[in-house]
Amino acid sequence: MKNQPAPPNAIVVGVARPWSAAALDWAADEAVATSRPLHLVHVIEGFHHTPVDLDGDVDGSTAVEVTGVLESHPSLRVTAHTDTGSPAGALVAASRTAETLVVGATAHTLLKAVVLGSVALQVAAHSFCPVVVVHDLEPSDSDARAGVRAVSTHPGRVVVGLDASERSVRALAYAFEQASRRQVGLTAVACWAWDESDGFLALPVPVWEATREQQRRLVAELLAGWGEKYPDVDVQTRLEQARTVPTLLEVAVGASLLVVGTRGRGGFDGLLLGSVSQRVIERASCPVAVVPAPDLDPGRRGPK
View 1 (cartoon, rainbow, N blue to C red):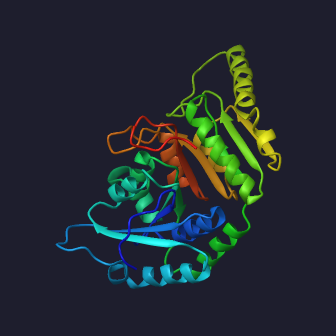
View 2 (cartoon, one colour):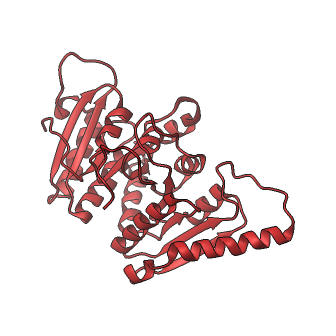
């Protein structure tokens, strides 16, 4: 498979060990379901004097997985690009024209994410399009990996975290679209006094009661109109006086997808990933979609 540029509005996936096995499956399923092309990005960290071909430089186990996915999705339109340098940088660059960017994460990378950073966290922080982070299983656990495929074939609900910012609107739109296409319900979660540090303030009961009512109105306003656009989606809400991250993780157990918003802007000169998004990526038991709010980069195509 020779180097080719990514077609517009493709599902782009990073293919490189140790973080791509389940992500490749997820991306292929998404490409077929949305009738979009699949673009594989393989980046070899370091420097080489000449370009390399995907077939020649992907390690044996990954090459087998790529071949298997292509055989199981015969209708896929597939292109690929191989380069050297920074995997996160190449994927963020691809996100300028991608519909969705899919990356994987292993337990190894997640345990060291705070200290060393990881491709998944860097890409989610700086991407110009929605990023789906798919947790991979240990390569040796083939039986469990088969179980992951079974779960993705029979998914649970889509869960979306809401707050009072514009990022919730974009995340909510993405969550409804995913739930409708998957023919599953949607659970919208809002925690009182949502903040990035998940701290609590020692406030009197009347203030908390006012906060609860304010949150109820906010959630109702955010959800207004979506039922008419997606009448096939059963919507449930969870409004909690609770810590944001543990609540999202609890509700998302058994979910097909957990959707959160982030500030947007994109590129490595953009803002860092919020701590709520970062921690659910690190700890969630299901795929996590990080949806950027409208960005300020004039080079990025506008919202659909």
